[in-house]
Image (cartoon, rainbow, N blue to C red; front, side, top):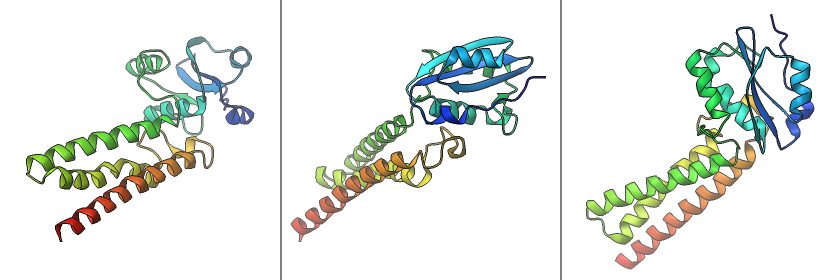
Length: 199
């Protein structure tokens, strides 16, 4: 039976490092470290499956923890992964993965979602004959929804906040709040401007 080892607290505060997937007997460990060789020597795993160097490993690790949450052995870094999950996890620790590897990518995802919602709402409003200016003003608050969601929730479901250091998501929440306020304010001023022109 493997010894359950948590990530070293000193490693949590550093930026660049590795996320690794190793096997001990029938359990798989998803961990992070700054010194891969030293960590692997201390773990003495039965098999090193995958390692990936990233700018801030705690965020990718937290996303993987969330992804395989139902297979996690409580309060450890160990999982009972199925064969499909093992392949999936290996892919995410290679160029085949699509999970964002940094927390800052969450804001990029939110901005992309905002733009997409704005375009969809704009096209619908134009099809309904609202006119160019009204369609634009109507679409802006709808486009701000992902940013407001990111501010209030802290993530789009890609990781569990409890798996990250305290307050680490607040930088992203602050960015999301600024974007949400800008988009919503621009919408308000556009509506006000259009109302004044029509009266």
